[in-house]
Length: 194
Image (cartoon, rainbow, N blue to C red; front, side, top):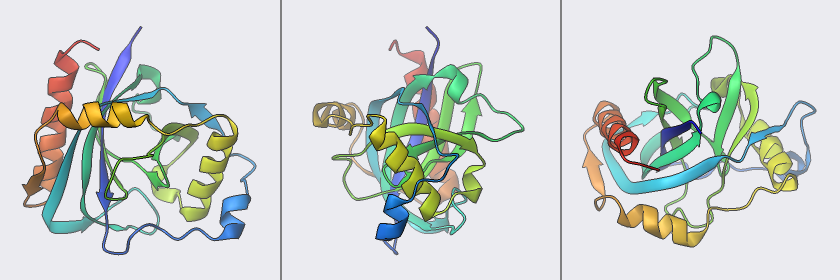
């Protein structure tokens, strides 16, 4: 079985989580679909940035200040780079900003803003589209479809194990340093056996 090691950076922002109205939470876009729940957490490291930056993973471009670098395993076909819309990787109520792909090694690195803890986080691949076109209504719609299809949070024991497998929190000067760390962490994880 081919597997992919992925990195996502779960990050908090100055603005906090995106508000989702009750109308957004109950409306399901007709083209929302779950592509896969094949996302497994391998490692996690908390981080802070000295120079926050605007994420390009959503239409509203939230500011990334701190969060978690998370190493993931997933099906290789889900992260192959293409010049068309591809399945969007979601983490809770956020979209993963893909920043690095290595199809030969089966690695993907990305950024997503999130809460200060990984407790209760859920991960899944949603319907194909361009991540930068996704807004809070689309996220709510995709999440509702995923929950109805059986999405469950990552077990606490898996999160605890993932956090223990990597160093304590890190501080990075900027996005470039954070991305380099995420890429190095993904390459290290790719060399280890699943």
